[in-house]
Structure formats: structure tokens, C-alpha cells
Image (cartoon, rainbow over all chains, first blue to last red; front, side):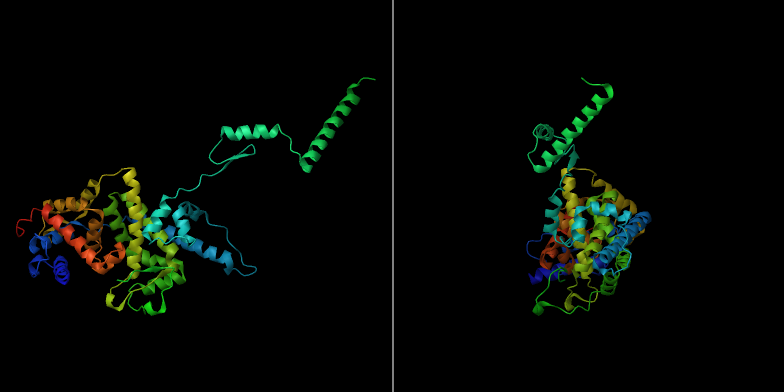
Length: 192
Length: 213
């Protein structure tokens, strides 16, 4: 193993120098390639894999988003305990609202996820965010308008509740209808 | 390279005095004031972007991955622990290793998603790399364009772990110890990965029958 390590270090170091300056070394067991071939391959890879720089526009845009996140973090710290009586606590910044659309970033911010932990990130990425509930006519369905939800609302409307509050509401509604009927009779003349 | 920790308290016997991490002043400044994270961002944005571009072969995907990497790094910075060892040397940066572990996870996740929804061809990055490579650089290294293209084809077809080890070594110029920290492998395993990757490139170059040229 030690021989293998020394050999590989020599090959890799050769990639850092001109190939001609490299010294030959022992080859590890099971390697059928001449060391010079590996060294040349290292030189070719080094020349071919160039360092690519992102566009200036992208770099500045991301710098702005990082600054927004840093400022939002400071605001959050202020609002969650750092504020003294009389301090003005700012509203959440609109610029950072879309950052929190990334559920993994929100989990990292909350300290629930280690972004350097491969297994944890993979597990978190597989979890789909819950569908938002839809409120419709008093029926809450988990995904969208469903026939079950409509049937439940119809059934519930046809079945008066027996609670005290419901009874009081029904009596008040009945009295209101009776008052209207009485008023109509007095205006238009009812049966003598 | 010791692995960077996250939110864990090491036993006192294992705790190491950290005096070597070259990014320590920048990390401490960013911890005191998150706005100071900008210095770390400017220092590493090109490295992270290049890694993402070679892995994802798409400029837009590489920008997205770079953005996610730095946003998550900033969000997690208060819980990052430096754990460099004296033997890691004065050039050690556990922050860089930690940052690239985050980038590695972002990229791996993106690649899994793309496997389900295949999009851009890897040929794009081969073309992009060759377009950007300076002819003078190739000449100085005594490398022809054909050889560079063949090497990129070989790199493209490497298994994931070998390709990543090679990219971290030759694009990011990381030490074996740093690559081991990023990939979560032993240093010996990383040496073997790089050696096998170079072997594959040498075979693609047709140099497996004797000395090159």
C-alpha cells in the first residue's frame, strides 16, 4: 500500500510539473500502464479542463441575493429576541420571500438540515412539499375541489345541528321570517 | 484533512486547536456579520461554478447549483466548525472542503433529477471547455487539440466518483486530503480513483501500449 501511495503521489506530482521533469518510480501491482502514459494523461487533462468563470452579471446578481439573505437573517435575529423595547422590527423583505420557496434552504436556515450531509440532503430532497389546502364553500379538501367535499357540504346543510348555538340561530332566523310576514300582511292588507 | 463538522460537539480529547485554516479570518468575520460572507463568496464562486459546470454540462444548471450552494453555505455558516489538523499544512481550508461538500450534494441532487428528466447533452460542456481553453495553454503543455478532445471524452465517460475526484484534482487543484474530505472517502481510496481515472484517459489517448509520442 505504501508503494502504491508513493507511486500515485509521484504520478500526481508529475501533473504539477512539466512531464519531462518527472522521475520514474515503482508501479503498483496490477497496473499495466507505463508511468509516462499516466503522466502525459495528467498533463492533457490539466490542459483540457480549464477553469471556467461565471458571467459577471450572474456573479453580481448572486452577490445581491446573498446580501439580501444576510440582511434578512439579521432582521430575523432582531425580531426573535435581539430587539429591545421600542426597537422597530422590520417587515420581512420581499426580496427574500422567493428564497424561502426552496424548502431545503428553509430547513438549513432553521437548523434542521446539514447541507454538507449527503444522506440527509438526499432524504430531504425526496420529501415533496405538502399540497396547499383549498377552502371552498366551507369544505376543505386537501388537493382540490372533490366530489366528496361537495357531497359533505350538501349532507351537512340538510342536517341541522343540535347544538345550543345552532338552535338559537334557527329560532332567531324563524322569528325574523315571522316578523317579515307580519309586516307584509300589515302593509298589503291581510285577511281580516 | 479532517472533515468539517456541523452542529456537533466533539469530545474534549478529540478537540484540536485550529490555527491553520487559511480562511479562518474570513469565516470569523462572516460569522460576526453575515454581510462579510461576500469575501468568501468572491474567493470561491469561480471554483464552485466550474465544478458545477463540468458536472452538469449546462450553464444555467451550473448557475442554479452555484446559487443553491452559496445560499445554503451562508444559512449554515453559524453551525460550521473548523477541524483542520496541524498536519494538513498552512494551505488547508476546511471551509473550502465544507463548501465543496455542499456543492457536491447540490450537484448530485441535480444529476439525480436530470436522470429522471434527461435534458442537456454532455457534449455541450466538452465544446464549452474546448472553446474556452487557450491555445497557448495547450501548446505550453505540449498537448494537441485532438488530445484535449479525447481526454474530455474520456473524462465524460468516467464513473461519477472517478470523474469528481479528477475534476477536484485538476480543475480545483485540491490535495488528495481535501478531495477525501469532499467525497467522504479515505485518502487511499481517492488516490486509487484518480489513478484509475488517469488510466482511462491514457487508454483513450492510445498511450496504453508504450510511452506517449
